[in-house]
View: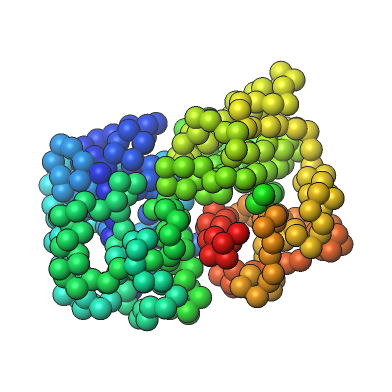
Length: 195
Length: 195
């Protein structure tokens, strides 16, 4: 399994599909999901994408996309965002499972990360940061979890938690890429290793 | 200068921002533009992105984004698509220059490629294709042009033209990525070389 965890300021309420940037950069979230899960004309196998929405009014909310179960998703931002919108609405009426392959829970960033450390061991969980060790020099196994932030990055408190948990910082270079570009590059680096 | 040329089936008429996929996959076009020109909180310097729209009703139409002059663009698909929409409309009333940094011309894919071969030499123009030589083994200079297709790829006739022109096929692997992912990866490979 390849997993991604995105810390986002996305809103935890209904939002307008015509104005994703003003919903806590839901455009960024949708672009990250799309980049993580799609290949040309197919979904990747064995990928889980978790986004923790930390925006108003009732953060946190974690939405998970699991490619092996997903149906009826398209790579455009508006389509992905529409599924997030439905997940938020469904959570509001008490549903933890939204559509096929989409899960929504009242779970914080730290809780999601802790679960993954327990599941895979902290040596298989990586924090993507410009100051980390070059990804090309880091041993990464088939089961791996990659953590990244949105345009504002991961807050200091949460970052301190990651480092305290023994999670390694890895880097794809000194350039500050868009979060979705980071994901495309990480997938590519893993693909090149045949993982 | 780093340049990208995208062969697209995007429409050459007005389209709905709420339904980009049905405008000849204008979502794909917008995502490619965004990935090519943006970094986190900034535009790349010295990047030109050319998309040749080959969809109905009056193909071809070439729209160029030049990062050194661009203003008021955001990375979300809807924003980029809105600038394409304006460019198409402006062309309809006889304008070749649309907004700052955005140009629109009645030019075909072959014409755009020929111009770039003349400008940079065919050894600096590359066709991205799964069957090409591994990009990591290819010498690429600072001034380089990368050609790719949309979800349906580059048609046989245009492909034959590329090969006849002595343009080299280069590859980022056997996996069929989304066009926007290909662009993120090419930018990354160039960035790692300090180009």
